[in-house]
Image (cartoon, rainbow, N blue to C red; front, side, top):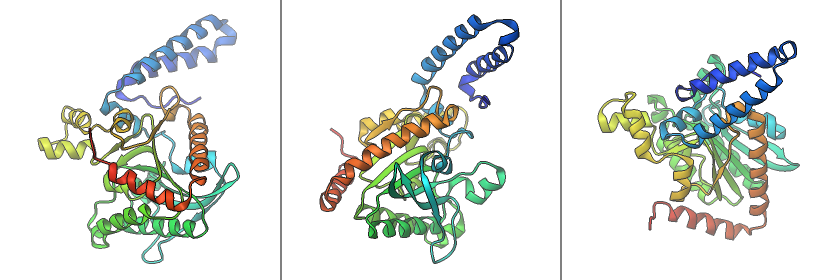
Length: 318
């Protein structure tokens, strides 16, 4: 197993994983079975304690881990017969948002999700998961197609935000996101949204309106990135101000569920989704299947009424 690159708060975990890997490689010759068993136990305890007490900024770092599974990884591990749908019929095919029909446990659905890319070339092609207006136009057009054929929609959110360039603004970025939010709120088909990594600003909201909104345990969802928040509040984003901003934003899964921003938190494997992608995919698949089965039993009119009430209740405290 390849040991993921360590985050700043887990160097000791990384060192122990490397030591364990060396021990396992030489176990047969050295007869160190008991030492391996003891180290595995210590490693599990260390991971459990560390990840049970992550600070907000640590959560952001986990959500951004380069080895964390992305939308197309989940497509490969969870879905069958995926057929990607391209283009917005107006400008182009935004690679930061992927759409396509697929089957989940034999049931047809439409998948919409952000893709950041793995290699440098793919990341540049995907703009690191920052979608342009044509991405949201594409997503909405495919969701309306799914509604026409009475297929449910699954949205996987993983973006630091919509692309902030001049060209995107000239092509109506803000209007397209607003239109997407409006149309998703009244789309006559079940919608399940899950934040699988970063849930940044309007870029996330553009495909984030659903009957069920979930978040992975170590993902985050926020009105702005910690760096952006620090830049506004303290005029700079430093190693001191970014953690302060992350704490102030209340962006962790536990805080979001407490506030009612998300409906449920999906647990991650010990040490984060990047350490056991297939285990994470299985857990996510079970969650999606359960919610889609529940929503399929609700009449369309009741579905819309519940979605409307859910949206109207956001921001109400007390």
